[in-house]
Length: 95
Image 1 (cartoon, one colour):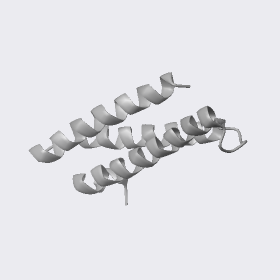
Image 2: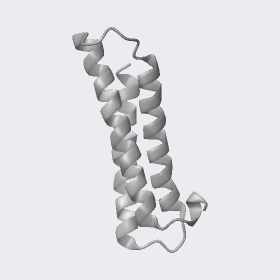
Image 3: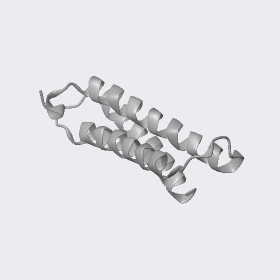
Image 4: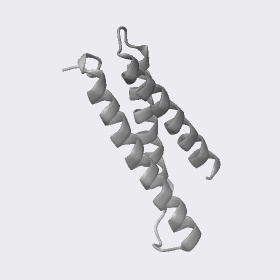
């Protein structure tokens, strides 16, 4: 089954999950960089975090671009796009 064939609610749920996992991983990376909790390179963790956030953002945009989307799903997709975009910008600028 294609991702484009899934209902909007499922896509928004997956967008939220990918986005929140990406935000948590990026936050862990920042904490480890500041407090030196674990002596490990944070580059791969940052890459995975950014990838997950971009994927969540793309799923939210995919919902917005679909035709005949319910108004509440469209609003959820807009909010998700805004939140993930701001979080992604913050984590990119914090590197």
